[in-house]
Figure 1 (cartoon, rainbow, N blue to C red):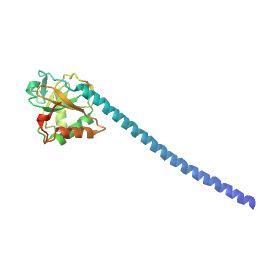
Figure 2 (cartoon, helix red, strand yellow):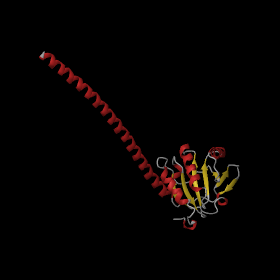
Figure 3 (spheres, rainbow, N blue to C red):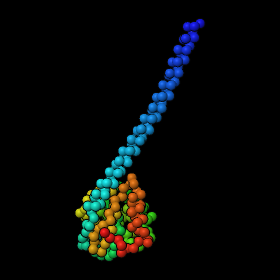
Figure 4 (tube, helix red, strand yellow):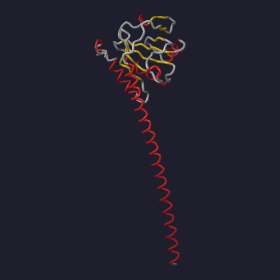
Length: 209
C-alpha cells in the first residue's frame, strides 16, 4: 500500500513537472518572439536614424547649388523651354528621377497636394526621365495639377544620385536651397517641412538662407 502511494506521488510529480515544463517552454517561446520583434524594430529604427543623418549630410552639401538658366526642360505636351522662362520667382521644386521608388513618389505627391495646394509659393515638379512619356504617365497616374517638366540632365549635386525623391527652393537667380529628402520611414519630417514652406501666412520675401 505504501509503495502504491509513493508510486502515485511519483507519477503526479512527473506529470506536474511535464506540465510546468510545457508552460515554461511556451512562455519562453513567446518571450523569444517578443525579443525578436523588438530586435527588428530596433534595427529598423537604427536604419531610419542613419538614413536621416546621411540625407542631412547630402542636403547640407547641396545648399547653394545653381541651376543653369539655359537648362532645357520639356512639359508633358512636348513643349520645350529654357529654365529661365520657367522660373520667374522663388519656387518649391519636387525632384523625381527614375531611381526613385514608386511608393516614395506616390507618398511625396500626396503630401505635396495636401500641404501645398493653396500656397502662395509656386510649386513645380521637375523630373529626370529618359522620355517625357513616362512623365506623362506619372502625371496621369497621380492626377498632378502642378506644373511638371522633364529634363534628362543630372544635377551636379549628391542628392540627385539618391534613391529617394527630394524637395528644394529655387530663387530668381537659380540658386537652390532648403533641401529636404523624402524619407518614407519617417514621413512626418517631410510633412512638417511642407507645412512650413507652404504656409499661407509665410512671408515669401523671408524665404532664403
